[in-house]
Image (cartoon, rainbow over all chains, first blue to last red; front, side, top):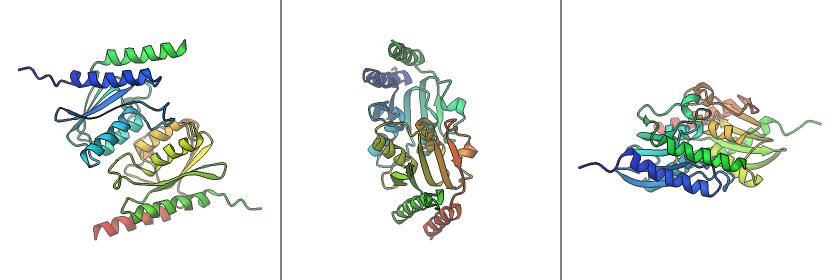
Length: 147
Length: 147
């Protein structure tokens, strides 16, 4: 039997979150955190609404997942995020010791990989899952903002 | 007339916050944010109490200061923090465009300077203000934990 719980399956849920950010006029980034095929946190960027640079989708998801689990470490968890995390979010993921990070589109300007932010040595990274969908949403957002 | 509002003056207030963290069994790091010689945010590490890796003193101070100012950018503000910020906090400070960071003791293992985290190009950094006081508090904390 086919396993429906693929990385694409969960990334679609992160994309739904990104769409919700888009509808609020926020830079459209969405994130979810999954443990044993169960979504335990979902969030989207709220930096404009909250006027808070720390309100990235990933930061909120980390806090929500830790709250759900009753402990601050996210060992055994996977983060799905539509855009490559920044230095701040990668730094938070480092502290969380999260097991796996799956991201969609790369951020060649401010993504953690180019910036050289260090993750926990036991964290694995999967790149480019539904990257086109994530970057198309970003392009559409910035095209509408320029109008 | 002597200006009482020196970096040491404000760092003493950050050290008071670090002492409050110490008293709660938290790794003793304190932070304040100042604009035009007025303290607009004060906080200390709460990662254990909140079970949240994102609850560093600096992150809370950034959120509180933005809330006070009614905007997410901290241009014109100075952060005083007793220990060198980590990747996550430096990444948040990058987004905030804060004008000045003053820290006490260096963190040679996980501080942002060794890790290579990038700050905003207009942010200036002052190092080593009341560093002995800050590192003595840390040493005392870890000595007591080992007992």
